[in-house]
Each structure stands twice: as C-alpha cells, then as structure tokens.
Amino acid sequence: MREVFQQELHEVQERLVEIATLVADSIDDATRAFNESDVTLAEGVIENDRRIDVLAAELDELAITILARQQPVARDLRIVVSALRISASLERMGDMAEHIAQLARYRFPEKVVPKGLRSTFREMGALDVEIARNLTELLRTQDTDIAEHIRNEDDKVDALHLAVFDKVLGETWKGETVDTVDATLASRYHERFADHAVSIAKKVQYLATGDWA
Amino acid sequence: MREVFQQELHEVQERLVEIATLVADSIDDATRAFNESDVTLAEGVIENDRRIDVLAAELDELAITILARQQPVARDLRIVVSALRISASLERMGDMAEHIAQLARYRFPEKVVPKGLRSTFREMGALDVEIARNLTELLRTQDTDIAEHIRNEDDKVDALHLAVFDKVLGETWKGETVDTVDATLASRYHERFADHAVSIAKKVQYLATGDWA
Image 1: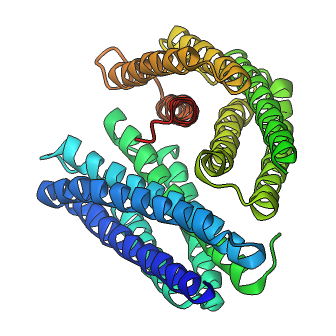
Image 2: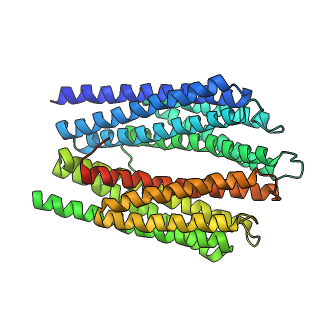
Image 3: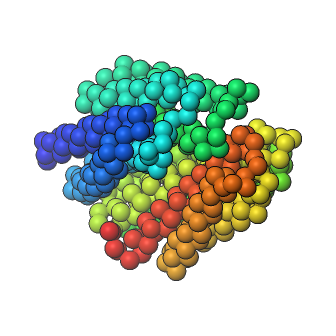
C-alpha cells in the first residue's frame, strides 16, 4: 500500500511539473505576443489555456482518488492537499498568461504596449517567464533555494508594477486612454502571475521544511 | 464515528457561513467607502480582511484534521475538499473588497469614482453586495435556486464591467489618467469578486446535485 502511495505521489508531482511547463510556455508566448503584437502567438496561448484547465481538473480528480483510496495522514495528507492548491494556482497563472495574450489580440494590428513602457513590460515579461521556469524546476526538485529566488524575483515584478503606475500617473505621460487601460490591466496580470508563483513556492517550502506557518 | 463526522461537517459549514458573512460586510463597506470616499470605512475593511484571512486559514486546518481523523470517502470526501476550495475563494473575495477599499483610501480626500461612472459603480457595488448576501444564504441553506440567482447577477456585473470600458474608451470620456486607472482597476475588482462567488455557487450546486462536471 505504502509503495503504491509513493508511486501515486510521484505521478502527482510529474503532473504538476507537466502543467507548470505548459504555464511557463504560455507566459513565454503571451509576453512575446504582447510585446511584439503577434496575434498568431496570442491565439496559441488562448488555445493552450484550455489544455492547462483540463490537466489541472484531471490532477484534482487524481488527488481526490488518492485521498479516498490511500487515506493518507500527517505529512502525506498535507502533500496531497497542497497538490490541489498548487494545481489551482497554476490554473490561475495560465489564466493570467491568457489575459495578457488577449490584450495583444484585441488591439491587433495596433501596438498594445504604450510608448514609454516598452522596456518596463519587456522586463516584467522576462521576470514572469524566469519565475515560471524556476517554478517548474522547484516542483521537479523541491530545492528550496529556488523558492527563495522566486520570492526575490517577485519583489522585482512588484517594483516594476509600481513603476508602471508612476509612469502612467506622471507628468510626462502622453498615452491615450486606451494605453492607460492596457498598461493598467497588463501590469496587474503580470504582477498577479508572479504572486501565484510565490504562493506555490511557499507551499513547496512548507512541505520541504515541515514548517506549516 | 459517523455522528462525530456529521457534527464536524456542520462545524465546517457554520464557519463557511461566518466567513461569508464577514465578506458580505466587507464588500458592503468597501463599495460604500469607494462610492462615498469614506476613508474611515475603507480602513475598517482593510482591518477586517486580516480577520477573514485568519478564519479561512483556521477553517483549512479544521478540514485537514477532519480528512486525517475521519478518512471520508465518496461524497463526504468531496464535501471536505470543496470546503477547502470555498474557503480559498472567500479569502480572495475578501481581498477584492480590500482592494476596492484601498482605492478609496489612496485617493482620499479626492473622489475616487470618476464622473460619468458614478451610477455604474453604484450598481456594480450593489450587485456585488447582493451576490455576497445570497452566497451566505446559499452556504447556509444549500438552496440551489440561490446558486442560479448568483449566476444571473454575475452576468449583470459582467455587462457593467464591459460598460465601464465602453465609457472610458468612448469619445465623451473626459477623465484624467488617474480616473482611467481607478475605473479600470475598480471595475476589474468588482468583476472578480462576483466571479469567485459564481465559482463557489457552482461547487455548492455540484455537491447538492452530485453532478461533478
């Protein structure tokens, strides 16, 4: 029974890594679609998000089946419950990537990123991609140093998020209303994406250290 | 054992109702703070949100303890897992109320709601409050008619959310950039609040009908 349980946990972990990989690909494509107004890439992200949703729902069913069949307790139980929560956060990260891609598609063939914010959004996008790749690695290896790194990168995303508002609300801002709306939403989506990654990283850290704060 | 389990499930339900009641109070105060630029009310909401977070975390611990001690299967297991997910959504609804309150506080003593959008935001706020009150009732009674009602009210919120963008991006919009930013964020928070309520309503519906789509 114990051995079966370990195999099932391994299956859960592999599926989390698989979903995280898809999420990382999504944010990579979404931020490129957004920064380069690539509508084909954007449509791929929107399509891809359905697959993420299905895989997350399937993983949830697997986790519930494990709870029913294996009746885990203590740390084992927490691992399975955490998998449910991590899957929910990954699914939301996929949604954020989709929202960013949708901004690119709505405005096509106009440039979606307002002048004066191009380098900021490139930087935010690169950080989100890095965070997502790191998250995949964290789920694969449970190396808590990676969790720390994700938190640090998230601080940079938060700083850029504030910088977007400073820019938009500053005296030199020449954007149209549509630019202001796009910048506000895009910045929020980038920031939320990284927040979800931090929330997953914390759960992995707790599991690794046993420190359920 | 079975009787203890029923008592514990009842305890879970009561706590969900308690948290939902606090969330309903929060959105009521937050939308009033936002529409009337009442900074004291806004600060109360921000304070109140910490209590919601603590209660949600405590409920999660209770649910995990029940899983460990009672080892529920089938529908009983799904009820406990659903409680974990409902608590996560309620916690997010509290966050949305807090974000709306924060907008009111940041702009104080300026009016936060831009001219031309006052009646729209009043309507959105009233819908969110109604949805939250209905959600509390749904969690108390498991009456699936209420779940249907919440979905219908959410459609109205979505329509108002689109109306905000139509207004802001329309030719008659005279708002400053700060008004555009506020309207964009506030509208998104109102819409997300209602979305979370729908997601909870669906879970209660599934539990009541056994239809796990």
